[in-house]
Length: 385
Image (spheres, rainbow, N blue to C red):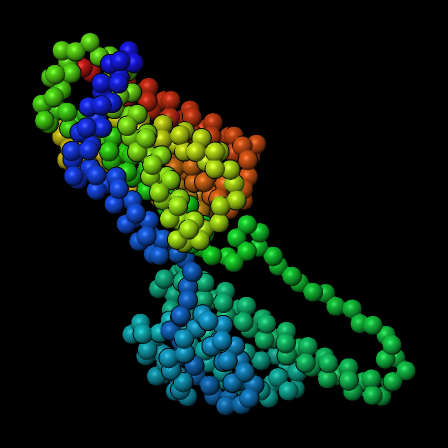
């Protein structure tokens, strides 16, 4: 048995080595995808083009505007007193935010009254608009708290001048400190890049294996396999083992680039990640082989692959939280192996958790992998269809 599998392995490796397109897919394409996705796949919003309509023209209004400018999130492209001019730029898409300070802004602060400023945000992109609103609320909250502290200090100072005998009393205050664990800088790149590693691994291994048997049919070598004593299981093993090696090779490469180039923290066990990757490869290689057995040509195989990959990404939690999906769709995601591997790889990278927290995700991957590989073996027939 193993002697026959060895010969299939040698044949597959030789075929891959001679195919220039295959070498490109294995060596170059994953690095290009990682670099491109590493810089592109981010939900961080910086350098927001902004217009300021300052009708107050006081030190208080300038202090507020300076907070927006110094935050690093807002690029002030226009200072004007004409609201229509700023709105026109917003309609044209040249700016994403308008900050309008009313004339009574500083006067209201001096009197201790509630005062308002108007913020207009381009809501075409709802995600960007939500992020901008969060930035604005945080800046305004800090400014409001600072003004309240100044006013309190000023009132206390006047009161202490009238009643110096109570200077020894201590005041108490509630301080709110928020700490973000696992990703303290709240960089979306740290959250997304491990998912990109999983995505690249899935694309490459399914693509390679889906073309494995179909290529035998197109070049006519399937007839030679028919007259041999090779069993379907042996042929499947001979087809999948080379791609398992390739999958692990790509994991080493893309992890190295992610950690040393992009600076993504890795806090977990490398051996545990390799074990989980092996379970994930069972599912991707099984899917690729199943696609290969139901396709007659490489074109059909590629079309089937595209049809499968889009739902797999959308239903994996890669970009959109599964908890926000309709209940019925959430049940469908349990059939998606990428869903489980994304949880595993993100938790190992960012949280450093062990198998005691991830065993259920790994068990689901193992079950799906065994089922898919079993269906692929049953589907395969040693005959030309």
